[in-house]
Length: 335
Ligand code: NAP
Image 1: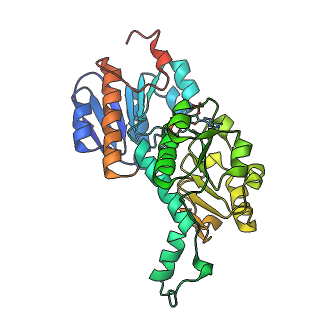
Image 2: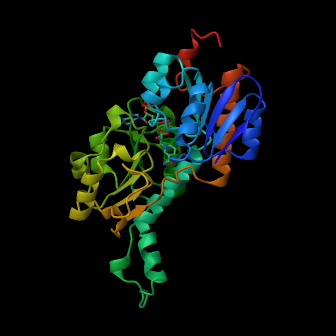
Image 3: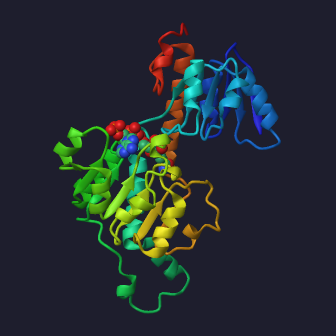
């Protein structure tokens, strides 16, 4: 379904995740073409709207170099996410298109999701809950159903940025966990406030009981966790991924889980999403799979949309602050 709301000279294409109130705020400054989903039936209409648009806003934006070429007026892209690996940043930089994202507002919720995965994989929550629901709980649980502690275990954070730091706080302050982190730059606040220890990725993989990924997906983080990295982990260790699927070589992970190279995995993200239900990951008791819900709470998704709408309006009208990913493009732009 698409709706066209006429106003002003500016034109905006809005895609997914926007309420009537958000659309009304956008409509106050521009004509808005809203698409709550993209499919074969409205793809041509979307392309035509994009060709006229000055601004694009939405979640899971679909934009590649070719689409950018068909959008000669585009000045601002406002993604309702903190990650922007789905967007052609280099081409946007060349074209002087400003990219805005929604950092901070999703940090705590995504850290909650990571911790939910940590708890679920260590204590085998999904597997044992299924046992109850399916009528297989017939005797007292024995060692074959025991899990592993969370408190006191060594947590290794790969990507100690906003989300990584929030996971580290939960671990150190809530669960008395020693925290290791691998990062290109030292994080003195993590070290001073949480006693976190910086080490190389290899050392982190070797020492951590739980390895948690919260790095952005880029060329240099593609398959950062591959067969060799998994082989460095302890056989009792768990891998948690709330970053992006392609940070992990998924086939290597499946092999490692099947061969007992590592014990368990908790995954919110996958190389292909939605995950194919035929994936071995869906059939392994030692794997918890989630449908990419890192930031998916009512409160956080609403806050992200508010932030993205403000970013787009402020960027198009020059009225206020924006969360700019590539603020440099504004330097020689008279907008
Ligand atoms: P952020 O504050 O930019 O943190 C990312 C951190 O990763 C930075 O501190 C950076 O370290 C570090 N890093 C980059 N490359 C690295 C590498 N090769 N090895 C180790 N560390 C590396 O971003 P954020 O807000 O925490 O978000 C992180 C990512 O989480 C996003 O890009 C997004 O893809 C993902 N995410 C997923 C969900 C979900 O639904 N599952 C939700 C939100 C975000 P330096 O500071 O040293 O450069």
